[in-house]
Amino acid sequence: MSQTQTIEAPADAGEKRKIVLLFVGLMVTMLLASLNQTVLSSALPTLVGELNGVEHMAWVITAFILASTIMMPVYGKLGDLLGRKPMLLFAITIFTVGSVIGALAPDMTTLIIARVVQGLGGGGLMILSQATIADVIPARERGKYMGIMGGVFAFSSVAGPLIGGGLTEGPGWRWAFWMNVPLAVLAILATIFLLHVPKVVHAVRPRIDYPGMILIAIATTALVLVGTWGGAEFAWMSPQILGLAAVAVVTAVLFVMVERRAAEPVMPMTLFKSRNFNLTTLAGLLTGIAMFGAIGYMPTYMQMATGYSATEAGLLMIPMMACMLLVSVIVGRRVSATGRYKVSPIAGSVILALALALMATLKADTPVYMICVYLGIMGVGLGASMQILTLVAQNSFPLKFVGTATAGQNYFRQVGATLGTAVIGSLFATRLHSLVAEKIPSGTTGGDGANSFTPALVNSLPEPVKALIIQSYNESLIPLFLWMVPLAVLAAVILCFVKEVPLATKIERDPAVDVSASAMAGFEGDVAAVSASATATGPAAAAAEDGPAAPRR
Image 1 (tube, rainbow, N blue to C red):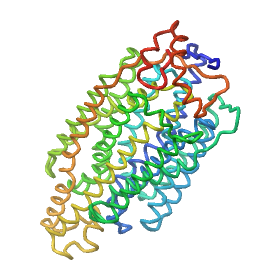
Image 2 (cartoon, rainbow, N blue to C red; image 1 turned 120 degrees about the vertical axis):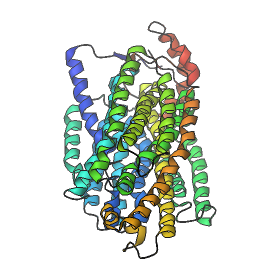
Image 3 (cartoon, rainbow, N blue to C red; image 1 turned 60 degrees about the vertical axis):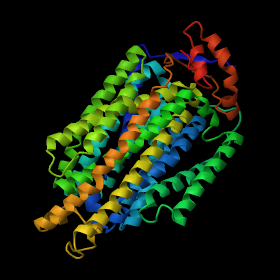
Image 4 (cartoon, rainbow, N blue to C red; image 1 turned 45 degrees about the vertical axis):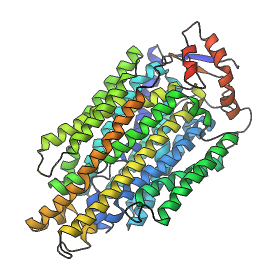
């Protein structure tokens, strides 16, 4: 093995100040990406009504998540190979371009294209921010930082709908895109002046896994199209859906074959030899389906079914944000203080299941405070689990593979989020069209039926017609929450089998960083040597069973 450089947690004030400044810069980039997963949720009813495209409503959210999901493993690998800083600057730039296209979009097609471009950059913002923290903070200390990052996501999950609602009622929904430009400039400046991480050095020029990137993009897109179009655009057993399913399976098999042979695989198969990585990845996927499937359409439901304005709908998400923020920070600090992390995500998944079951009981006349209580319970569950799953995945591998491991875990979580949003959105829209056609005579509401519904239009209709529309919205969305309860329960069961490996207390970095696939494969043979060399600082041998790389304490 090559000689390694051991870096402990920063102790002096100067080093801590540098870490804080770095963390502030990463928080800005995380905020930029996470806001745009939710900022349009409050604007959706008005947006799709103006552009006459309610049948494409799901794609406004799904397009961003799909594109960012595809790019996650790409940015993770390229960040390991080429360095986090240049890739982060590239991601911010692409994201900004997409924001400008969205702000100028004249129709739904252009808007969806803009969301795709935003996602191509957004995937890098999320992954590179989390991976960069692992470059400078040991896993044991990383818990409190990951907790705060979870708090940023919690903040944006509520601030996004709130900001989107305020802009929709004020200058217009297009400003939900324009607002990204000054934030992006701030993120670029923070990255240039505050992000100082070790430079990646290679003995030979790294080889980019282009075939792997293309195959994973095709497989992911085909899978999401099955969830989006199945039962809506086409019957589940139609040639189109079956063909897409076949494409997803075939390209996934080809992807595995290519990755086994690639010199620099975008997602090394060695990752899946880690028990903890597999368990937390599967649990994250299930949680993502439940989380985004539920919160993605709650602001829309509250506007249309209860009569709240876009701003009020955003404000009603605050209890979820506050609980998720508070619990995420508390759990992160507890993990850093005790080194114990297994119980928290299990409890969080159980609480999430409870919240989904409670939300399935909502009616159009449910008191506002009960909606807030249910959303708050969901926030507690998500805050206790989401960021800890990423920390466990990072702790399963050495520093040189942290970007790839972080991207792999987040990729499957986002696949769940994409499928959750797509399937719930597709079922929601299909059920809504069916119920409106069944309950309301054609031409009664004016316009293009359910396709042109906006909160203002619904509120202007005669009371009997308005009541039927509200009933249709309630019956279209709320029962779907109950269908997601088993997913959260299954995530809790899976997490019971996670092995609580001690969190690393030091960072060991090779002076000349080599992130080749051969190094990844060879690391399995080095586990015994790593364990022996780490005996002086703590037992790492116990972690060797968990996967190809035992964390070093």
